[in-house]
Amino acid sequence: MERIQTDLLVIGGGSGGLSVAAGASQMGASVVLLEGHKMGGDCLNYGCVPSKALLSQAKAAHAKGSAPAKAYSAAQDHVQAVIDTIAPHDSVERFEGLGVRVIEAYGQFISPEIVRADNYEIKARRIIIATGSSPLVPPIPGLESVPYETNETLFQLRKRPDHLLIIGGGPIGLEMAQAHKRLGCEVTVIEGAKALSKDDPEAASVLLDSLRKEGILIEEDALASEIRGTAGAIEVEAKDGRVFKGTHLLVAVGRKANIDKLDLGAAGIETTRTGIKVDAGLKTTNRRVYAIGDVAGGLQFTHVAGYHAGVVIRSALFGLPAKASDRHIPWSTYTTPELAQVGLTEAQARAEHGGNLEVVRFDYAGNDRAIAEGQTKGFAKVMIVKGRPVGATIVGHQAGELINTWALALANKMKMGQIAAMVAPYPTIGEINKRVAGAYFSPRLFESNMVKRVVGAVQRWLP
Ligand SMILES: Cc1cc2nc3c(=O)[nH]c(=O)nc-3n(C[C@H](O)[C@H](O)[C@H](O)COP(=O)(O)OP(=O)(O)OC[C@H]3O[C@@H](n4cnc5c(N)ncnc54)[C@H](O)[C@@H]3O)c2cc1C
Ligand SMILES: NC(=O)c1ccc[n+]([C@@H]2O[C@H](COP(=O)([O-])OP(=O)(O)OC[C@H]3O[C@@H](n4cnc5c(N)ncnc54)[C@H](O)[C@@H]3O)[C@@H](O)[C@H]2O)c1
Image (cartoon, rainbow, N blue to C red; front, side):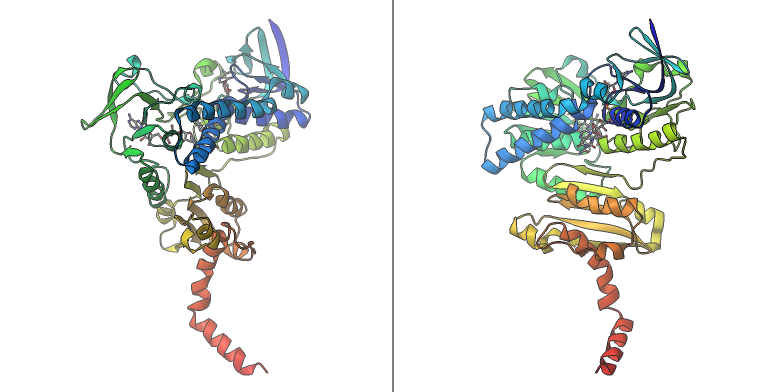
């Protein structure tokens, strides 16, 4: 048994853990990183990267018209090639080069400040838990005896499924539904409540209409409650008796925090229903230990794990006060069209701000570039309180790119006037953001009797 003493111990080498380890090490802290499975975590190996790589292949196939069966295996090969290209950036070698001591083993607490991994006992001044999440596999009767995929196995398929059944109409379910449909599979999405229920319903319906027009069957209020069949002939029965038949099954009904291997009890760390219990500064109930990213049980995105990393570096390395907030965190679903959100949705903003809320919008159909590119479906709407945006929703072409402007505005508590002051190049899709700001000021300028009186008076006096 080797005993190691370090400033910082990071448990988990995914999006959050790697950001902390790289940052802390380069700022002079001694850092030990534990990774029990694959460096890069879910995002690189089973999540963001493979899903976006498959979507890009599907988009290309869709543009060509139809996809032959061999396009599917080629698309999955491309997915692997993309992972392989990015992997060196997250590799043991790169992190050791940055001065991090990487131990490729799972960590387990044996006391409030000591973690065991393989033949090592690591005592650290501060410990960061960044162990991520895994696909939730619910106890639906029959599921245990039927072959099924999750995001951890889907990208290994090479033979194209004839008909993919997907349980869950969240971002994983819908991104994978469109990717598979465009690569030539039949696809049925079985959603127990409403699809994309975390997003603005008006924007979600624009996306759902598009997906349905492409031929994806999306069945809502269809809680999967029994599963039967064998490989190639699978049936999912919903609670109301509807039966859906397909050849393959993908389970995408949310995530569960990776805490089983940690023995959190040995360190006095409490959990909640969704993950590890943390305070606003991401500290657990053990004051030396932080939890970040998916395992902290809040918003589950790579950029959130990265943001959390910055918050704990500030606190653990510099001893400065630091709090994490969700109020300026954006997200995007990378279907075509894309659906993006930052801050409050319209319903949330109305509940929180009532009569002080103003909602302004602009449709893609009014944007010249969108017309030129035949991408006129969608809209942007911005929720504004006392001249400052508190949320933005965009559905349409490149919505995930357009939301960046509003993410900047919310992070810096900017005023609508600052957005309106921006000159956007013509013709760009990004002009939509400026036009939304214009929609906020237009009635104030063009429908104001006061403005008309001032202009009238000035014109009379001007030489
Ligand atoms: C299909 C899919 C698509 C996604 N697409 C996007 C997207 O487009 N954009 C986006 O922002 N987010 C996306 N996400 C979410 C994103 O992948 C996660 O939010 C992100 O990976 C979380 O980072 P993390 O560091 O918390 O955990 P992870 O990246 O999962 O890393 C945790 C690591 O800890 C390791 N580990 C676990 N237990 C231990 C232990 N006891 N000891 C040592 N190591 C341990 C694991 O092996 C893993 O490598 C997607 C997720 C999925 C599933
Ligand atoms: N583009 C992105 O950023 C992106 C993409 C994919 C995933 N992610 C992350 O991964 C997380 C997990 O995604 P997800 O889609 O698995 O989860 P989710 O929780 O967003 O959606 C799961 C859906 O499954 C439904 N469901 C649950 N049990 C069911 C049952 N028995 N029958 C039918 N439907 C059922 C739920 O009603 C819900 O709509 C997301 O919240 C997000 O944080 C992000």
